Length: 225
Image (cartoon, rainbow, N blue to C red; front, side, top):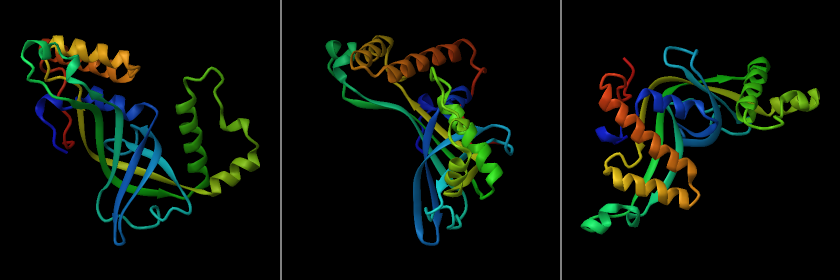
């Protein structure tokens, strides 16, 4: 991934992308070509040296049974948004502005492990459901469904674990714009109802300010040492 220094994501930002409820595109290179599946996941920081992404695929999906050639890749996408140059204070000053796109993303590389064990799958789907239901007023749990029904559903899936070897992450969130332009971006995104994107821009500015105050408090994420 191309990552200019001012868009490099620090460890705290990467942890946020990995830990929030989300799905990732799991991509594997196989003897029969490149295969990809959008897969909800949960991050397990205790697996291996750098943690792991746990997910599952339909048993009928050939991706789990096709051996991966080398590392596999999971692409995690945060909020993204079109940024209008009309939001910039700079537009009124000199007009030398153009549209762009803000986004957060992480490319998570690792070795793919297949889990076709009912106990592993049962634990995984419970954790995945709890993770995504955490913000609900009346969270659904696996125990709300009949046991035999859940057992049948588990037989229809196969667990996958991406044991992480390295991460490349990028936060392109208007860090290269002056403060007045950033204020305009936040206001514009809020007016369009893109509240998460607006919050991401504000958080990126706060982290940049913190980095200036404490230059050794955070470092960009690259291949783990």
